[in-house]
Length: 117
Image 1 (cartoon, rainbow, N blue to C red):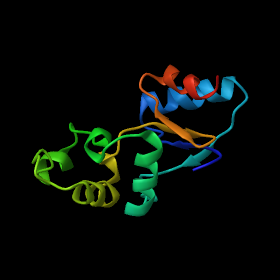
Image 2 (image 1 turned 60 degrees about the vertical axis):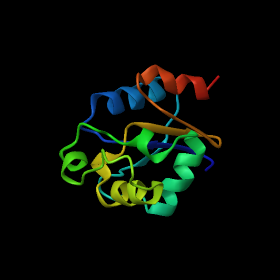
Image 3 (image 1 turned 135 degrees about the vertical axis):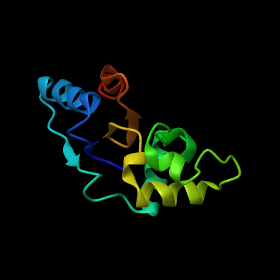
């Protein structure tokens, strides 16, 4: 996962904040509109590896889909959680900034600066 990408939801204040912060520093990332074009399970696995996270750590537990799909069930496999995120991209934590083979969740937005130093 090289290059500079932002997995972005324009309706999310944190995501907008990250984009603004990057642009203030002259960085124009490739915008990944993941809600419109959800990442495949394979893409999510690469993203998780780059983030150094397990699937459960990337889940947004406050979303209706989380409850409706019973994703709090600790017996669910990594693959099941990844498949759920691919099918229901609102479940994916955001924003995710990828830069030069590393990635970070931009919460708070200033965290993305860690990848630029």
